[in-house]
Length: 227
Picture 1 (tube, rainbow, N blue to C red):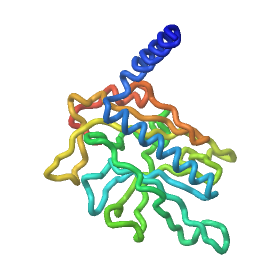
Picture 2 (tube, rainbow, N blue to C red; picture 1 turned 180 degrees about the vertical axis):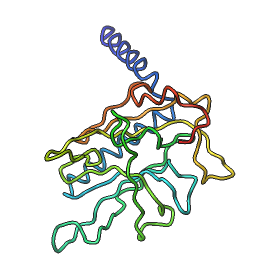
Picture 3 (spheres, one colour; picture 1 turned 180 degrees about the horizontal axis):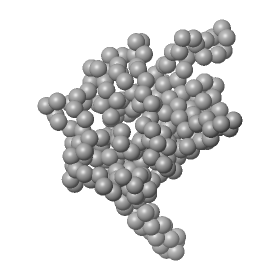
Picture 4 (cartoon, rainbow, N blue to C red; picture 1 turned 60 degrees about the vertical axis):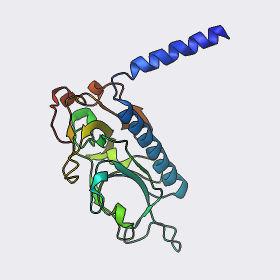
């Protein structure tokens, strides 16, 4: 029993050291929450044989305090007569999702379609008119198809299709409480307080163990920069 306890202590210590540079409690908690929502979206896509998306609020019309903090999961509605996706496109909220911890925000700077070579920003989409007022606005989105593939990273290259893993990155910052529509900014204390993960073709995620793995530009990030 003592040997088992000793081994567990060593493993926990090693894990803590490995995650030491990944971010503070808010960022770490937010990353774990986001990972569970990505797993939920992929499960819905495969289980319902439809597309599913993880949406991150870009600019909400009626609730700007949740900009870059609210995450929801939606799925493409199925036409009961044909068994195929409804036309025109209709996205249905599949869960309430989550709101990131206080002072933790989605990073528009480091969440890229191809994080390995600093690719383009994740695409955006509009909310559906049928959604509640609190959810109206624009969103960044990551998409899974019916086979569970993260199509956000699929790109065409000549006659073949390639996959460039996108990233999902969070950081600690501060928002102007008097004007919540303004983008939050990186604080001096939170300059290196970033964390996240890459999303692979099969929908699995790999956590960045330190800010250095996210992007080379993070080393030159200045406090006061917008998220």
